[in-house]
Image (tube, rainbow, N blue to C red; front, side, top):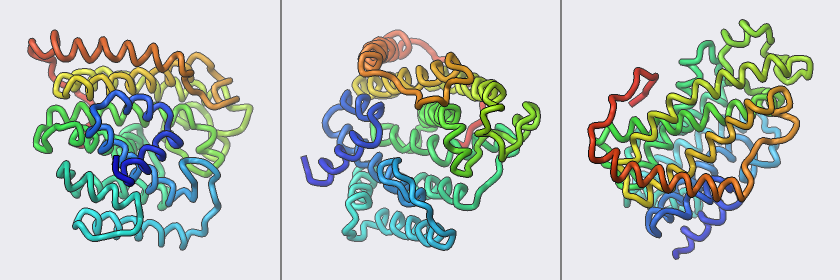
Length: 311
């Protein structure tokens, strides 16, 4: 294992236990490339948020955040051009982008998602929220699919990968509604908030927990058709990659289920899955991947439902 791959693996193990558990199911080269891509994504997110591996947020002045954003654009384009760098995250990204031919458009669209946070974009409708989800997660799903061997021109499979990213981010938003609101970020559609009678600056108020729980349920329900669509992308992946993706699907979907089940208490502590649950969901993912490699691959799959899409 190279130093870059080792550093990236350490990043994923500290930054996302769920992703780390799923990545262990990949073949060695795919795992290394997926972890290097993740390390870059995690680094970019941390730079904008003033965090370390998603924790210990530092308050940053607006001009400093803008400077950091411009730096991410410049470093990302330099990495894609193959220019040398001393930054391990960008060195790892340069290597995986070259090896897997990741399109520049996808990498830049991820940074565009962080620019939305910097600009404090307001999301009026669920379609606006989904546009944000595309930039910070759907495009990551597409890049991960390319890392797993999907051709950049295979839009059918890439749409399914996009759908999984969208479902993941909708689930994340539901889980983190209150924490995000405390940090001044609101991803809930403004029209949903108006219907629930919750002001954007009062989302974290205890008296609105029941209403916020209802909004979280709507987000989780909105994620369901994307999870269902994503399953049909598994048959376009090698078996071990399909298993890893199916395991991640099961873990994240279970987080959404738990958020809904806890209702107003969903934000008393961060919702997660236990090690035992991850093992069981990984086993279930293996069965789902096996189905994708046999029954699903041998028959014509259903057309993708009429869902929001960027690809």
